[in-house]
Amino acid sequence: MMLKGLTAAGFVLALAAAGAGGQRSTADISPSLANPSLVGADTYAFYCAPCHGKDGKGRGPVAEALKALPSDLTKLSARNGGTFPKDRVRAFVTTGERAIPAHGSTEMPVWGPTFRALDPNDKVVSVRIFNVVAYLESIQK
Image (cartoon, rainbow, N blue to C red; front, side, top):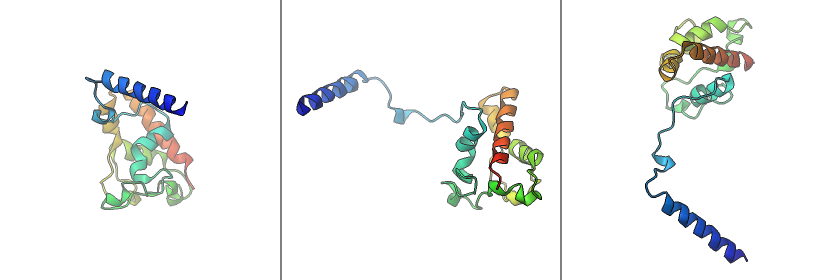
């Protein structure tokens, strides 16, 4: 019985492989740079977490490859007298303003132009930035 099931599974796989003759593998497809979600946590996970880490503490998987470690984004309020600097964070993400010295080097991508290049709808760009800033506010320690 087991051998019959394995034979049938092998046959199905062989048919699938034969039918995909002219098709491309998913390995041949470049991943999209645009995340369709406008949810702040999703935007953060897609664009920010590689450097800043899932927890926002600056230890993402590519952090060690950078000249300077990314900022701990969970301490933005603590470094600002207990108040989240929403306008400065929004300006920083949007245009790269260096109003917050703790952000360190200018290696961080400025996401405003990147988001505009991926989706020229200014309202969508504004919503994406507003939501990621709100998410950053929600992870303050």
